[in-house]
Image (cartoon, rainbow, N blue to C red; front, side, top):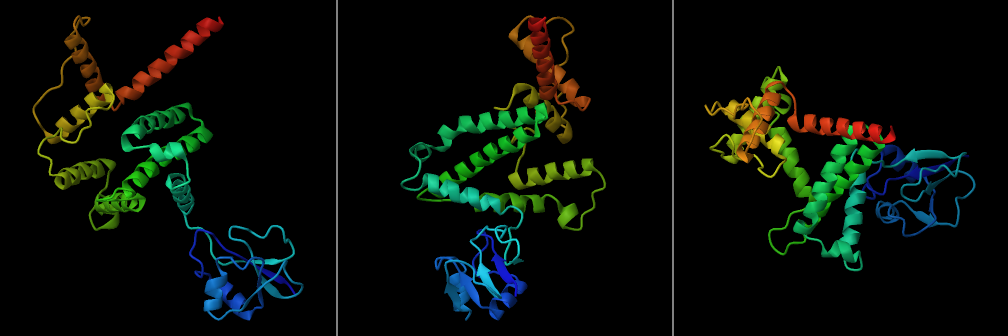
Length: 299
């Protein structure tokens, strides 16, 4: 008779098992290598006897694999999947690691961090993620997205530890989930949106209504890179129909700081009119310049 191996996920609550798993368990007999296995208590509570053994017995039986074990060490056995990860389940591992780092006996450096002390790392990781996108290195991008995700989780953990008004990563996820549903009525409701432009206009309108914004430029982060800021301001003002023109190109080489600022603003506005991201365009130009310098040096 064939040995049956029950494989379970450590990220799914014990006792939440598939119908096939429960059928096999009730048919028994059931054995486990460690009485501390998380499935033992719920199985016994459900009336399923579980016997502790040093190794799987010969003949027909169910062996509880350690959580996360896929049974590859037993090629002749039949594996039944009792529970498996849902998409996003690995995020629970990250939450557990952060909990360990911030708890007593964890990492002294992590324990000292604050929202302000972490701000520089959030910015650095954002730029490193952008660098990975521009370089086209897929492995780099996956790693940098992980570093960026860590920053989100770290800040959420700090907020969770507040003595008053705490919130955590679940609140962050719940907030963005609700926002996405609310701002996509053409997906989750009965509103029609035939083009991406329709979606963008509705998104901006809903945002203004939710934030109670009275000015076209409310909510634009002024600390963002200057070219991106200029393009964003022009976009917002044009969408709102406010009759304020962007600075125009001076026609001659700028002489003063104000002239330089107006000239750069005019370039950013012109780029936006042509569907070009001025910040990206300048970064691409910088990359071309770096390549030319390296070629000359190798010359």
